[in-house]
Image 1: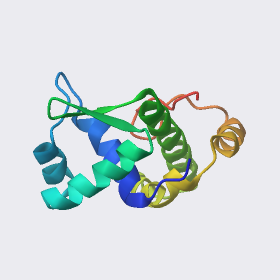
Image 2 (image 1 turned 90 degrees about the vertical axis):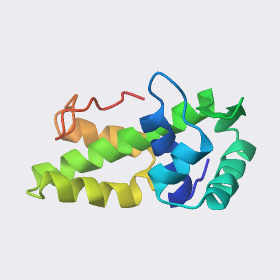
Image 3 (image 1 turned 60 degrees about the vertical axis):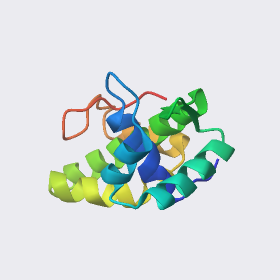
Image 4 (image 1 turned 30 degrees about the vertical axis):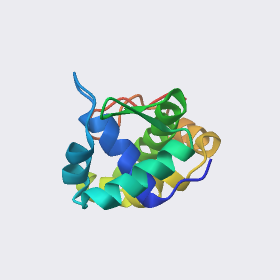
Length: 131
């Protein structure tokens, strides 16, 4: 499934904000630094794609949304690790990975990961998803 950069950022922010309680529209708008009407439009697109559902004002990633998040994190953390191992600062590697992680295919990322020695964590110490 193809998603846009804004949709990618929204999926990641929903996951980041989902602690003990799922985020609400206002939380997401503040977290993404966008106005609520823009957040509503973004959420409607994600809902049409089957990546989120809204329940009682809360925003929840669906199974497809969680799978998309895992694919993004696989690509992000793999590319971030590659750049970091190549001498790019951890912060810059993260910023660069953010620009393209949603475009990368998981199969390609698994090959890159294997060529890097199959690290289990990114430079920030976060686990690299297996799928």
